Image (cartoon, rainbow, N blue to C red; front, side, top):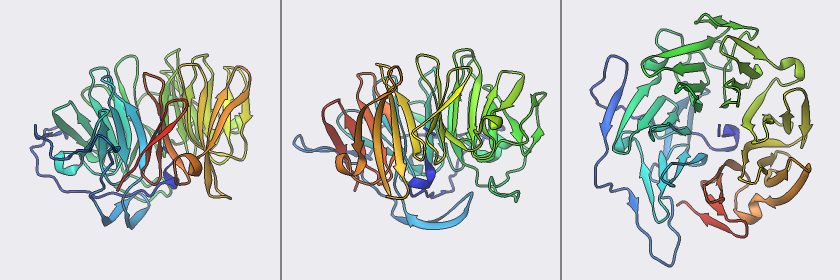
Length: 379
């Protein structure tokens, strides 16, 4: 989820867009060639992410809210080396090494509340939002509203069985066969390039799959392992694995409420346990580490070290931990408040040159080069 959503101030401004809609629900919007949202900066200061959306009343899966928008939900580096930053309420920002360019609903994004980012094999950027998906090809957006994604399946609130049309796309994956997987508050969907298929919804199989899982909702993370299995985490069914024919649950292992997922270069799978540290699965056994810590993101660097973003609810403070899984030693640990500001890291990304990027719930973007933290603020 690449994303821990209770630690950031989530919000959405759902704008009604006037577009020509195809029969499959796509909406395409051309982005102006001269992007007026590019934010200039002088050579002696760092660029900033300018917040433009203000305070709004908005609706999510939990009901109506009113808040000041902001907070970074995920960070991704694209093939060209640009850093993309998804925010709760301010759309997305693209950092090209010099300036930040802000894309919002005014530019064709389906909403300004973005939870997840994925780049596909063709270089298109997928943005998961509170109302479906926006796909950006570098020139224009193609939008898939959630009504088109779910088709005839009901939109159900993930905390109750009551109907709720506000379904959030928390995680995305393109597998080795080119299929796109979406983890949402309303279940798991698979896109084959033409249609979206609802894999599970409230315990009812909508495809000829077999499962020992009664329901999968609220899916923060999806990964594909080296064998081609698709793994999901869920807030209610915990850790699940799909082998192409059967969906298995790991509830019996105590994995009942999970967030982040990562497969390390050595094959181990790391699972964030909500409020109870992390589990490491070596293919046979599960081992628990950092118990009593809340993990908000997990990433691996080029040296095989695992980076954890943690949060201590009791002290309202977060830490960054770099961990060597071969020696089971903590290499370094930093206090978020001291190095970056704010109290929580919501996302981690590691770029091609080895820099580690952090996003906070206060909408600060930070780059760590192994020696220094460089903080890009918002205002």
